[in-house]
Each structure stands twice: as C-alpha cells, then as structure tokens.
Image (cartoon, rainbow, N blue to C red; front, side, top):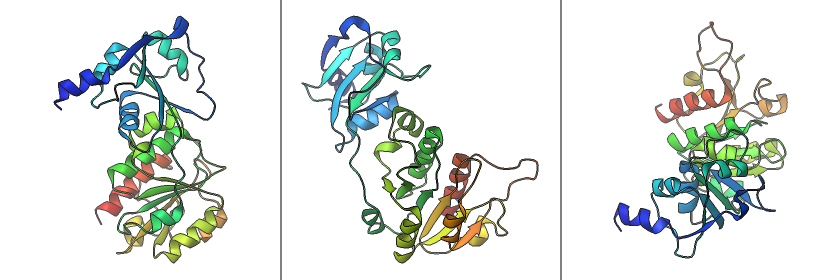
Length: 262
C-alpha cells in the first residue's frame, strides 16, 4: 500500500469526544501514550493490545501506518486532548490508550544475542531519564534494560514520549532483586561494568572483548554499595574537571556508543 493510501486508511471511524472533555487518567490497567513517535510505534507493535485513539485530524494525518477498519478513533480538539495527558505535555494531536506490555523475563534476554550489551539501572527513578536511556539503547543496539521493579518508574506516557518509540522495541526487564539478576548475568558470560565517577579506570580501559552489562547508578546517589560489589569492574568517563558529573541518561548514551565502537 502506498504511503498516502496508508495515511488515509489510518483515519478509520471517526467520532467525537464525549462532551469534549477527558478524565486525565487512563482506564484501570491501561497505559496512556502520546506524541507521534510513541503512538505510531505502539500502533505498529503487534505485542500491544490497543483500546482507543483520541486524535486531531492533523495528528492522524501525520501517522505513517495502518489501523484496522474498526479501530476506535475519536477526533477531538488539541485543547481537549490536553486534558487526557499530564500538564503542559506536547501530545502532537495523538493520545492512545492501550494495555501495558507483557512482562519479559531475564532469561529470555540472556538466551539472545550476547554481542549486544545489557543496560542495568540501579534505582534510576526519573521517567525522562529511563525514556532517554531506552532511546539510546535502541540507537546503539542494546538487547534490553534491566531495572528493579519497586525502584523504577512504571510504563507511562512520559517514558514513551521521551523514548521516542524505543519503549516498543527495547525489552524492559523488571526484577525483584537486582543483585541476584547481576549474578545471573555474570553466569551467562557477561562482564559487568559499573559506571562510577570515583573509579580509577576509564571505560575504554575497562571494556573487554566479550559480552558487556553496563550498570548505571541512580541520579545523584550513584550505584548502591551492594550493586557495585556485584560488578566485575568499575569505570568512569574521562570528562573535564570543569564539570562534576553527567546526567545518567547522557552518561549511558556515551557509554553505549563506546561499547558499540570498541
């Protein structure tokens, strides 16, 4: 199907938003996503179960994909869509309500391509940082990110918007015990490198030739002592003394680039 035909097909059945108002919350058990890249990626993901799309006509016209003929689409004004998302959010005329992605288990990742790095996040709680790390993970070929289930943001529109589609393509493994997960990662043959500003070796010096698990600490506090103890090596980025540290998502992007180009 030609691109223009696909865009026409996306319009589906149009209704009007009931009363021109939204609740500002997703239905129980559902996730609300917004922004063209996040919504388009979710619509194209066969693993997603979709519930409803609210959109402006311009928003639907911007999509490059195809919806089933009976897909529930409701047209609304941009100001009404703003009531469905977090405050001052650039929804770009698209808000999608869908089911959360199915859980992915660590052993599924460890049985995959070991040449691709794994990113382990120790209590990184800011959804913007997690979304940005997902985006970098997709850009530099990481096989997954791993977080502790109780100390990481939930799947959300903020994560998805910042990830710019990567939430749909990079597996996100949530574990109960991060230290135990690092043990399993080591048993699978990965060299665990913890990023720490106080480390003596640079990342380039610490990188092995084989599989790598990159461990990033929380914003501000860095890695917990127990997690650092479960790393095979600690490493730092050779940043200028003019700045104390980098944001965790920026550091992850640079480290993933270094791994990809070693």
